[in-house]
Length: 500
Image (cartoon, rainbow, N blue to C red):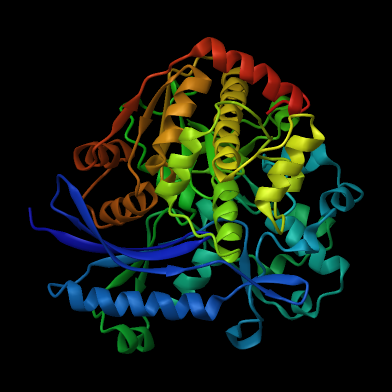
């Protein structure tokens, strides 16, 4: 079977890449074509995404792909984080830069939302975890401040939909990302227009919903002129990066209401959950603040958002700005040399969401909770990583309570796979086997759903079989259970015994 090449435009919260995947029918090999920085731009008191810089970097990557793949590319697809969006006005005019999800305009917005519609009603309609930056709350913040953009807008496109529109001129909302908005109903698999109306938000913004794997058609002539990519089609794969990552989890287990495995999509955020055949919208899910998001193949991702490697990334950024640069290997070596389980934090503590100085915020948490002073970079990083591992255990236990069965294996995929310290700590803290890999799960899922759209693969099981053939996986066995059990009790007390 002849090789075919596909392109994945993978935008994360801190960087973006254009990757090429070459599929021979059995294995997927891929090359990184380009990489570029990504992150919030502060203007006054607001944080935005620099969408034109992102677009320019994407076009540059596509031009490079044209040079490096002379035999041609069949299709391309974009995946990004969830919740954030661009607004188009009359004549499809882009109305300003999209806001970044960490912008302060949504501070305190959930309480204001509950004054209009109760928490129970919102959850019954959407099955989504309550986070202040969910799209519903971003729109409500615009309404409460009388934003002129909201009144001028005619279309809402989530970030991957926005870039697919720039590529093809097609305005549509891909389902896996639409499910992160908090105005999507997982039971009806349609927009919750009733909920928007109750918040006095315009339903005219909602476009047609499309399934992952939908062929959006050819690139616009201006894009072909800019990139030289002729005959290429755009495919809306699992446009939410976690949806693409989860479809690339190398499990052999079928989708089940009683799963024996869970996943952690590990990067800036850690998305930890199970794959189910349908949504689980119950009072217990609401009490534990879990989310039901759409997956590839009609599945549901029941999961919890955890702060993830954001804590470590921000520490490194602060030290870099202070003239003390560190490589990731440097930080991991210093962490390994620090005293184990000396101090712990709750990674989801509000004070760690977006502090100006993350190392100081971690130290302050430890001081406030009577754990003493953390000395040196290694102690701070070890505290962050071990706390993440213990948070994973807390979420694991609550997942087991929700689905009513024991989870035997944790699959870690994404960039966090490269942090072997964290992978081993996760096995130790949870007393479960950890299977780590692939690193490039999101890109692999994106590329292989494109291959499925092209008819080269038929099912999610076949996609995962290709992932297993194409990836070297690493297994971590749990160790020192008693010491981690003791640390977990301390962690639970620090976190207030919250139900994960």
